[in-house]
Length: 414
Image (cartoon, rainbow, N blue to C red; front, side, top):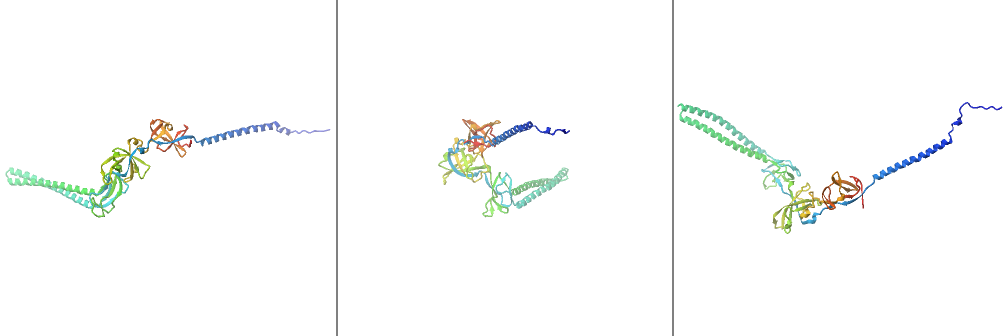
């Protein structure tokens, strides 16, 4: 007889995972993995596209800004000369004296009436003190005379009353009257002496003022000719130790050009004629100018006529005695030069863009574009004349995307 035993606990075999469940998990993994990889691929493509777009350089067409018309083509005469000031002075003193102090140096700008130097004024001050004392003494004498005059007038009044009463004689009355008139005459004389003393005071004051050297006009000191301790005089004393000037002053606003024109070509020059001046120190800078006057005499030794040329716009780079070459222009070619001496520029109308009501162009520099506002004249067929903002020789964009912006890197179309 067989006996079988069954466990009273749960059946552990029932805890096993079925095959269908294992198959379902593997299927889910197979589905999710390709989807995640696809998303990563799409994101990567977007990043690469952004990077590629960021480094994208738009292709643009460019051109070089041309000058309207070279005025040098209309030169009728060339001449050489120097920059000279109309107002130039060697400032000295009115009196002979020893330099006490000099307050300026070369290159200093001074205003009109500014103190530049002083002389020893000790002698002039002594004379001023003496004249002042004489004047004051004379004024004091007048006060004393007026006291005596009052007493004499009272004496005259009493004498008249006594003489009317028959007590005083006519002689006593005449004496009293003469005394009053004499004192009045002394007062008049003293008053004239006061005027003379005041005149001497003014002369002494002028001597004191002459010891102070002031700038006769506003300008620049180009030379310091005297030092402290030296003797200066308005006239040469025949000695190397006596200076005739303290400083040399130039009014920079009066600079002009002095040229000698051969008398054979002077018929080509006239007052008001436009010219272009070129300094030897700045050969690439053309300075607009015009003929101020033609001096009405010739130099028989050099067979030349002196011509004065005024500079239209002065500049700090222009200095006295600089060498300069002057080109005399015909009128029709002078219009191609602007007020700054730059040749006027012409650009294609297609290069001009409108932004907020202003005309702009894009200038290409070192592979990048620069936004530039320009001022234009009236259109000349397909070209526009630039009044301000560009100069000839610059490279500008004439054709490119509408999305161009300042500082953007571009590729120039070959």
